[in-house]
Amino acid sequence: MKAKNFFTLLVLPLVFISCVSSKKFKKSQADYAQLQTKYTQLQGDLSTCHNDRNELSRQREKLEEQNAALVAKIADMNRQIDFLKENNTTVLKQLQDLAVLSTSQAESIKKSLENIGAKDAYIQDLQSALSRKDSLNLALVMNLKGAIGNLADEDINIKVDKGVVYIDISDKLLFKTGKYEVTPQAKTVLGKVATVLKSQPDIEFMVEGHTDNVPYRSGVLLDNWDLSVKRATSVVRILQSEYGLDPKKMAAAGRGEYNPLADNSTAENRQANRRTRIVILPQLDQFFKLLEPKKT
Image 1 (cartoon, helix red, strand yellow):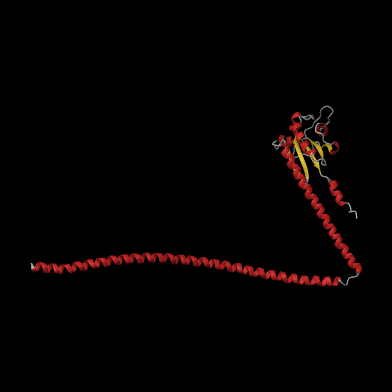
Image 2 (image 1 turned 135 degrees about the vertical axis):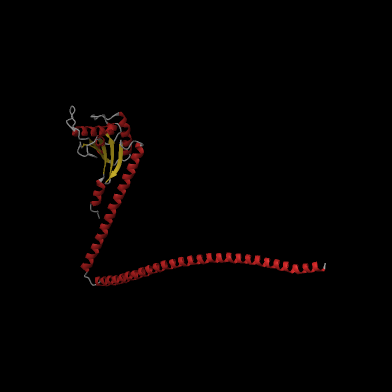
């Protein structure tokens, strides 16, 4: 019995020591793992710091470049200021020299300045008139397109070219082949055009007939000249008799085959060339009035 107790007393300290060492080992492992995690985190922070430092370096270089450019710009502006100061001094000296000019010379300079002012006002009047004319042409085109509606572009085309409004109406919309009598369907289109033109009583216009280059002869008509003229006069008569447009504001002309939109080498081009064109004539009297000397 005594031997057994002695053995127990001998073994218990060893077991206790073993347990204590195992706990310390596990704690050391946990501490190591924690330190490893912190180390990894610090490595990431260090990498971020390196990246931030590099970015700050790039920004600093960019700012230095911008600063150098601003310094150069300031230097250039200072040179300009110095030039303006020098030029101002020269002008002041010239003005001082003017003070000693004779009375006749001063009067001559004054008249020259007045002439420059008058010419500038004249140019402004011309520009204002041209701007007004462009605005009126644009409004006229918009009104015409709005009145005519959704006709196909190949049947009717309204445009402004070099300050002049043109209305091109295809041959197939107005006339039968080789004829110059306006078709009933075409009168609807002419009526819409007439409504817009009639709302602008100061407008003058010319109706032009155009053909292709295919030789034509029928009855009293000798050639394309005759056909184009007859078609133009047919349109003018309808605008006058059926829609009440002032004949004094209209003119009829035939251009035959000699002013084509395209060469007559294809059937499509020949069809485009067969057309009636209404040309809104520019009101040149407004510009001639500007050229007249002002009454004092």
